[in-house]
Image (cartoon, rainbow, N blue to C red; front, side):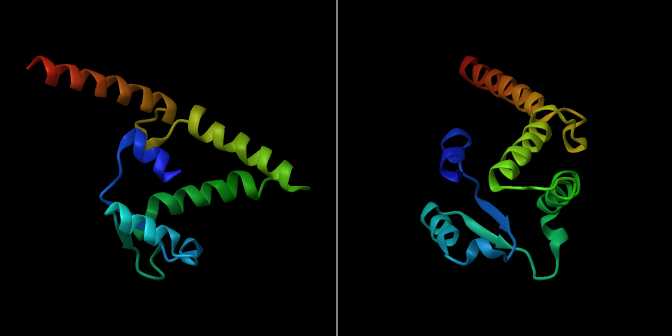
Length: 122
């Protein structure tokens, strides 16, 4: 997924991460090293150093996982996907000026195109 996002938006210089289970295989560490990306670890016991993801995980837990009884993996996948679409497409976010992520992204793409045209015409 990071490779696909990187092809579209470019890769970041750093990625802030916690010390979670995603580092058991060291795959993320090796990938970041090969791409020249610095992994910036939060200090153990300091989740607010990665506040955006901690906020997201809290919302996912409170609004989806704690609200549903999953009878199978397939039902869990469907319900979580429904929540993800609602969260990313239709729900306004305060960090985006009460815009939905999809509306914010559309405006960002439009402005990005305008900036490219401005640079080409200078």
